[in-house]
Image 1 (cartoon, helix red, strand yellow):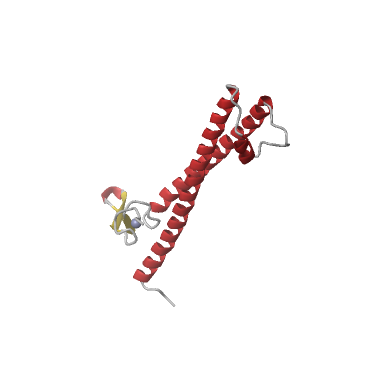
Image 2: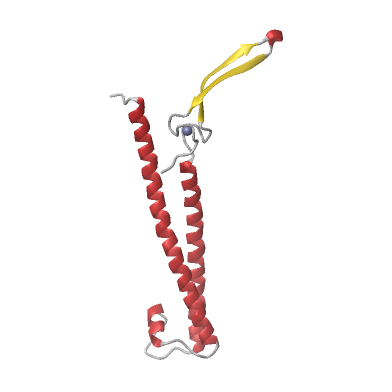
Amino acid sequence: MDLNRDEDKDARLARIKAEYLALSAELARLRERLEASKAKTRRLRALMEAVERGLGIPEQECQELGITKSKEKPDDLFLKFRLQGLIRASDSEEARLSDKIDSLERLTKELEVCPECGGRGRIRTRLEYETMEGGIVVPKIEEKSCGLCEGKGRLRF
Ligand SMILES: [Zn+2]
């Protein structure tokens, strides 16, 4: 069964829009995780500062961070060592999330460019060569407004 032009266009736009919305949702999730990761790093650095000033860490915080390995109260050197490890892990999680967000943002921008006309807003309908006087061949190009993006070059969702 052949689809007529409009149905074909609507189906293509719907497919691109679905992809765009899925990417946007994933981006929102990743940005939320990045914020949580940044907050965790800030908290860890504040705890490190407290340990360095000899103030220690409340036992509850130790438990939440999974630092307590035994019933004994961990000493400052042990706390610093564990905190350093947690800060490094949190930093690399942030870097990983930022990279992923950057690449999804690029993909999202690419999806906004009309695939039919490549962002030009116009489509070539005919390309012929005309031989001029003296044997010079010049291309004769006809263009029309792109039907998918209606000449805008970009898709808006
Ligand atoms: Zn277009």
